[in-house]
Amino acid sequence: MAYVITEACIGVKDAACVAVCPVDCIHPAPDEAAFTSEEQLYIDPGVCIDCGACQPECPVDAIYPLDEVPEHLAAYVAKNAAYYGR
Ligand code: SF4
Ligand code: SF4
Image (cartoon, rainbow, N blue to C red; front, side, top):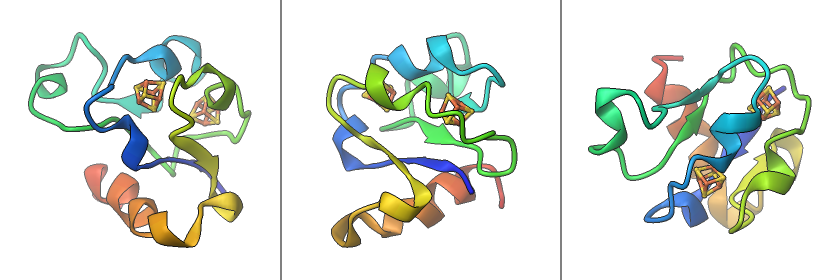
């Protein structure tokens, strides 16, 4: 399983989640070139260890565990995976 970043991140992108992820699986980080062009950040489902550390850090509640992603935000599961070609 993995955590998923959804719509509320768009336009906020404060990277608070990036700072706490123990496995560095949230990208693009502020020091990456794609940070300015991507509208939101994404979690790599193949690397996320499901620790949950990022979720309480998000000021706009954009992060959900895979099995708790609301139905209307379901497309973001694939959107996160697609960023990593998964
Ligand atoms: S759940 Fe843990 S490992 Fe997964 S993205 Fe969040 S902080 Fe990183
Ligand atoms: S903490 Fe929330 S709003 Fe900030 S970058 Fe992460 S997912 Fe986006």
